[in-house]
Length: 92
Image 1 (tube, rainbow, N blue to C red):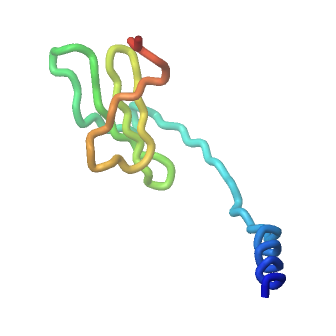
Image 2 (cartoon, helix red, strand yellow):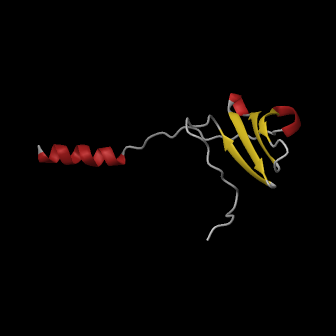
Image 3 (spheres, helix red, strand yellow):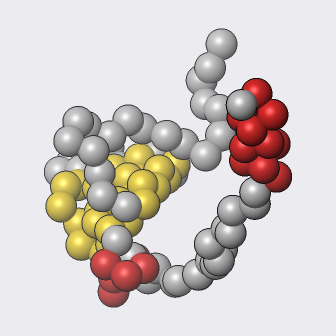
């Protein structure tokens, strides 16, 4: 019985699983044509919140403020999105 269990364990580790095909796609997002502004500055600063049509119906959320842009791809979580710039800013 012990040899049987050992054989099953060894065969289990040698079994390979087939990985799915990995692919990628690139799409252009034209801010003027593909995006809708749902919030923007009304005389206070320079910022805007936009939603754009993305690949296969996935939304692209674009936040702009003070010449910095944060992008979120896909369906947003139920909680609010946190600001993410592409590099460290004002960190100690």
